[in-house]
Amino acid sequence: MKIYLASSNIHKKKEISEILPEYTVLCPGDMNIEFNPEENGSSFTENALIKAKALWEIVNEPVLADDSGICVDALNGEPGIYSSRYGSTPAHKLSQEEQNCLLLEKMKGNPHRNCRFVCAMVLYLEKDRYYVIQETLEGTLAEKPIGKGGFGYDPLVFLPDLNKTVAQLTEEEKNNISHRGKALKILKKLLA
Ligand code: ITT
Image (tube, rainbow, N blue to C red; front, side, top):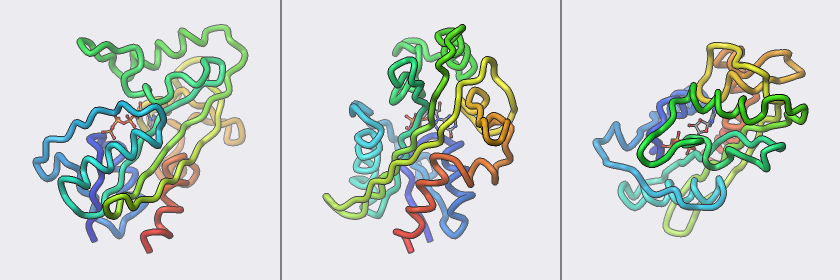
């Protein structure tokens, strides 16, 4: 069965495909669809809904969208919904490595390091008919990047219970406990 994913992020596509192996996940790029909706919502949920609705209007089939990011308590929830463009300007987008350095720099010497990954998933079924699931993964911000797995801010998020950063987990371990994995487990039931 096909599922349309309103995303251009290959890492999200990979994780979602691993968690929903019974579905073929199709992104706009796989269908030569130019897709760049303006994510001008004020929350993860609003942005996920914007993306889901925009693709639904093109394919007219059920669409899944994921809006996610990292929120650091000591920075009032930053980078939050701006995680993918943290510290960037329209003319210059920082690399992920630069964004990670920027976040560590802002938090240098700050002992209050609670943070969480957030994932808002919208399953848009028909006009004005959709489900929203939002999940989190709690951690603490590491002092430096550790680990090579995952993507994005994974090397910065330390999980005290496991004594590892998210980037030190296997794909399966991450999918089992992550913000995205938890949201997809619930979504799986809805899809069934
Ligand atoms: P689409 O909007 O096309 O889906 P995007 O990467 O721009 O792709 P978002 O606006 O949702 O997506 O931003 C998500 C950013 O948050 C992502 O680029 C990472 O920097 C970060 N992020 C989200 N989930 C993550 C995860 O599981 N591990 C590490 N970083 C994550």
